[in-house]
Structures are given as structure tokens and as C-alpha cells.
Length: 109
Image 1 (spheres, rainbow, N blue to C red):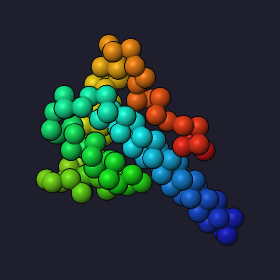
Image 2: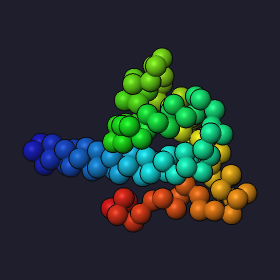
Image 3: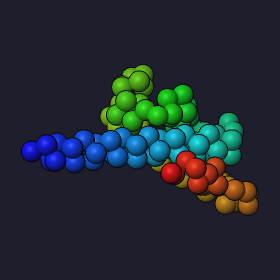
């Protein structure tokens, strides 16, 4: 029983670390997206991106509760995904580094 409890605690800890790393990487990508797009961002996408930057280690669910009005985690994720896609497309058109270029190897370890 104790081994099972330890194993579950280790899985939870690993999941939290993985989630935190993903959130930090997403924050860096969103920051790059805002740089690429400048003022060409729809307000609802900008707001989702700014939430991600201001709350860099928050989960998507937490970001949803911080939004005004509150949103589901799927709604926040969708807006951030569309923001990144829009920025990556624009970066490709301009021939400049996309949002993936903002992720350093240290962010993923």
C-alpha cells in the first residue's frame, strides 16, 4: 500500500512539473506572438495571451477563472492556440523566426 501511495505521489509531482514547464514555454511563445503581431491582434486573443504572460505558471483552468468573464479551459486554450497560429503564419510571411524560436532547451528540462 505504501509503495502505491509513493508511486501516485511521484506521478502527481511529475505531472505538476510537466505542466509548469509547458506553461512557461507557452508564455514565451505568447510573448513572441505579441511581438510578431503588434496591433494586429483581435482583442479576445490579446486578452487570453496577456493572461498567459501575467500568470506564467498557472494552469489553463486557472487562467479561465481569472478571465473576465470567466471561461472554460478549452476556451482559453483555443484562443491561445489561435493567437500562436496567427503569429506563426505572419512570421512565415515575413520570413522571421516564429513563436517556437522563443523556447529555449532549458525551458523544457
